[in-house]
Image (tube, helix red, strand yellow):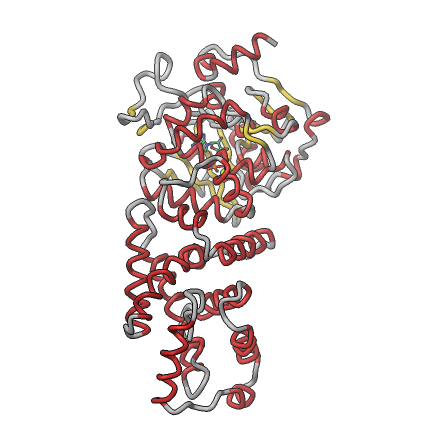
Length: 449
Ligand code: ATP
Ligand code: MG
């Protein structure tokens, strides 16, 4: 008990002289060999046949134990990347900073990582850190025990050996998972300083697995949250995307709010969590994303960010429209302002921002249901996403249901059916007058007139 306590408190320091790990038999953990993908099993077996240690590791073991379907199966080994490379014909080394090997097995790609150590007396040098203590480089090979100690949470430091069907568990991860606790390996403050993204990972993993974050790991988050500002924008984008597409975005966002992790972090989260007007829209968007992910349907980052930022756009567009600015140019102006505001902290790629703009720009055009216009809209490359977006706005009460129904029927209709559905062309002048009056009366939530 005392030893367990000490090793938990000292965490990584204890990792230099680790206590023997628990080796948990299949009768106790229940994870079956057949739960593991064929490709990752073959990969482990091939490495073992060549005399190396090899295990399925990390998220896959954790997710299977928790009864979830893993996203992918990663392998950890004591073979160096070069040695792994030699074991598999279809494999290549990727990454410069820390090399990993991608092994192709049929349609599967297995990521094989050499056990990583920590810097210091055994690691042969000091880790390179920035002024806040964030680890910039972390690329020393190590033993399995060291590899376990440098992982973030105990439930992520489990090694499954399909040959013996045992789980090697250095940090009581199996017990923690059973007790529904997300526990940090080592001293949480140090681990957050080394890598502030771990705060977001804590929130995501707790939400995804239905775990509660251990108080020791939870308490420092509020006071340390500003360290996230220090993380490179592209890494933040990756992590935010993971969080929003893990199938539990609604729960994640609630948890972020609880932990005080949204304020001043980066504009996107402020927008999602603080806006009053768009709360219903964002809630619907996140719930529908969760549904799609759980049904195994793809979720595009462009669509996701378009939904999350839409009410920002409306808030900027509305005053311009009320001031009599032309409809579409003022929408484009509002869109650019919103996306520029995000760019500083969250590196939304050009491709994603292109998708976002396409989806937004089509929204006012859905009102155009006469003449050739609807056919033109159907031809737009992002039509399907923009149409899904329209349906979300209908659901949120922003757009008349009749408009959404009309488009659904138009999509499903034959050529003749479509022609019969077109609305009569309104004479230009009176229509414009009517529009202006309507725009002035409407709230920001109904832009698509
Ligand atoms: P998921 O695949 O569901 O996103 P995951 O835990 O597998 O979750 P990955 O990013 O795939 O996340 O990482 C694989 C493993 O690498 C983790 O299980 C953990 O052991 C380790 N790991 C990942 N990120 C960190 C980190 N920031 N600090 C320490 N260990 C990490
Ligand atoms: Mg993973």
